[in-house]
Image (cartoon, rainbow, N blue to C red; front, side, top):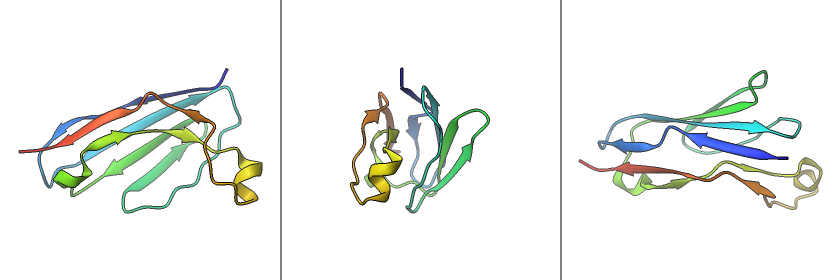
Length: 93
């Protein structure tokens, strides 16, 4: 069974930092991401970490971890087949 479990959300002040994590199970682990935040990966623990710095109010959102089927992704079918539960990040003073 594929599972994606997220953690690390919460309330942070503008200009602050937060680290989100996603633990994966049930499939071969690889990942790719582009964006203004920094992502790191621990293959041994099958986990991703999203380091979010210089947060702004407009970054307030529910952040999701999702899996893209690799073969479909390589063919340009950019969709996700499994999603985590989401973690809320609130940026507010």
